[in-house]
Amino acid sequence: MSGDSLMSGSFVVADYVVFALMLVVSAAVGVYYAWADRGQRSSGDFLMGGRRLTALPVSLSLTASFMSAITVLSNPAEVYRYGANIGFYGLSYVMTMVVTSEVFLPVFYRLAITSTYEYLELRFNRATRLLGTVLFIVQTILYTGIVIYAPALALNQVTGMDLWGAVISTGVVCTFYCTMGGLKAVVWTDVFQLGVMLAGFLSVIIRSVVLQGGVFPIISDSQQGGRLNFLDFDTNPLRRHTFWTITVGGTFVWISIYGINQAQVQRYISCKSLTHARLSLYINLLGLLSILLCSVFAGMCLYSVYKNCDPWTAGLVSAPDQLMPYLVMDILGDYPGLPGLFVAAAYSGSLSTVSSSINALAAVTVEDLIKPYINMSEKHLSWTSKGLIGMNPATDMCFFIQAAISIFGVIGGPLLGLFTLGILCPFANSKGALSGLLSGLVVSLWVGIGAQIYPPPPKMTRPLSLTTEGCNFTTTDTRFPSSCTIFSTSSPLLADNWYSLSYLYFSPIGTIVAISVGLLVSLFTGTVTYSTVMRRSGKLDLTRDREKKFGSANPAFCDVELDLTKSSIPT
Image: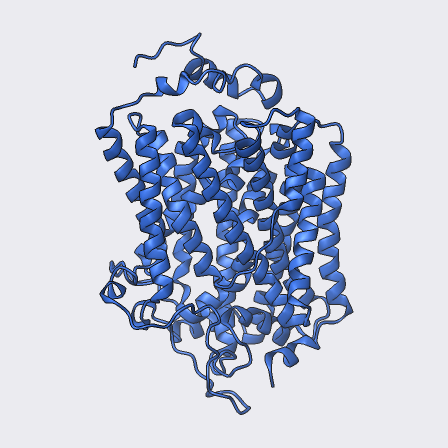
C-alpha cells in the first residue's frame, strides 16, 4: 500500500473546515487592519506599524516568524532519525537573545531606521548597503521557497491536493493580508498562527501519550532506541550534531536571524519604546523554547509509535519529512477535525514565515533600492510597498531543515560579520567592510556548495537505527532515495575534512572570515572613526523628522551622538 493511498482518503469535511477557518481568520486580520488604519499615508506606518506596538504581540510574532513548517515537519523527523540532541538549540536561543538585546537592538532602535541596511550606508558607504541588500533578498527568496514547499508537501501527502495549488494558495493568502494590513496585520496573524502551531503539536503529543500509555513509556522507548543522545560532547567539527555544533554553530545562525535579519529587526524596532523592544525579545525566548520542546517531544512520540515498524524503511512514505503527516493520519484519522488542525499548524508555520519575509522584502526594496534613487511622495511610497508585497515571488525547493540553516549560514554568516564589524570595530572602514563581506561569502559558499556536492559520510552524520521487524505486512525493504541528493561522485581529498564540516559551522566561518579580513584591510588602508558617519550630510540628521513620526525614545540618541550641530567628536 502506498503512502498516498493510505492517507489521502482520510481527510473529511471537518478537517477542511478547520483548515479553511485558519485561512479565513488570517485573511480577516488583514481586512481589519486595512479598515482600522485606512488613514495611514506613509510607507513607514505601513511597514513599521507606526512604531506603536507593544511587547507581547511582537514577541509572539518574533517566535512565529522563523518557527516555520520546517519546525512542525522536520524537527520531529530529525529527532526520529538522529536523536533529541537538537534540544541544545535552547542554549543557543538564550545566548542569541542576550547578544541581540545588548549589541544590535540598541543601535537599530535608536537610529529609527526602516531597513537594517540603511545602517551600512550610514556606517560605511552606499556600495556596502547595496551588496548587503542584494544578499538579503537572495537569502530570503531561497528560504521562503523552502517554507512554502514544506506544508505543500504535507498537504499533498495528506489530502492529495495539488502541490502547486497549495503553493499558490499559500502565496495568495499571505499576499492578501500583508498587502491589506501591513506590519500590524502580519504581527497579529503571527500571534494567531503561533497558537494554531502549538495546538497542532499538542494534539499529536496528547494522542501519542494516550496510545503509548503515558509520558514515561515514550521517554523509555527513546532512551532504549538511543534517541536521548544529550551527552555527546565530541569536539570534532566534522560531526553533524553534537553539543558544540548545536550551541556554538546554532548561536551564530540565530544571531544572524535575530540580530540583523530585516524580518526580525523590523518587528522589535516597531515597538513603542526600547524597553518594550527588549522585553519582546525575552518573552519571545519563552515561545521559542516552548515550540522547541514540543517539536522534540513530538519526534520522541514519532519514534515510540514506530519503533518496531519504520514507515520510511517500509516504503510507506518517500521522505522523512512526510513522517509527521503519516503519524497524524495514523493516530488522529478517527477524530474528524484533528488532522485538519495539524495541517493548519504546518500551514500556519509557513504563512507566518512567508508573510514576515515578504513584508521585510518590501521594506528593503523601498528603503534601499527605491527611496535613495527615486523621489516619491510618502503616499506613493506606501502604495509601492503594497505593490511590492504583491509581487514578491514564491519559489520551490527541496532540502528542509538542513537547507534552511545552510542558507542562513552561507549568506547570513558573512552579513553578521559585516554588521559586527561596523558596530564593534570603530576603526573599520568601507574598504575593509566590502572585502570582508566578499571574502566571508566566498569561503562560506565554497564550503556550503562543496558539502552539497560531496555529502559527509554516515560516520559523521550518524543516523540512528530503524527497523521494520514489527510490521505486519510485506515491505519493500528499501528506503526511498532522498530527492535532495544533488551529486554522487568520487570525493576529493577536501571532502574528507573541509566539505564534511557540520552545516551548523557555515555561519561561524562566514562571520569570522568577514570580521578578520575586514579588520586587516581596514588596518592597511587607513582608519575611520564614527565622525565619518556623521559627515554624510542630510542622511544622518535623524532629529529632523523622526520625533513626530517614530515615538519618543529615539531622538535622545540622535541628539547626543549623531547630530554634528550638538556634538563634537574628535577624529
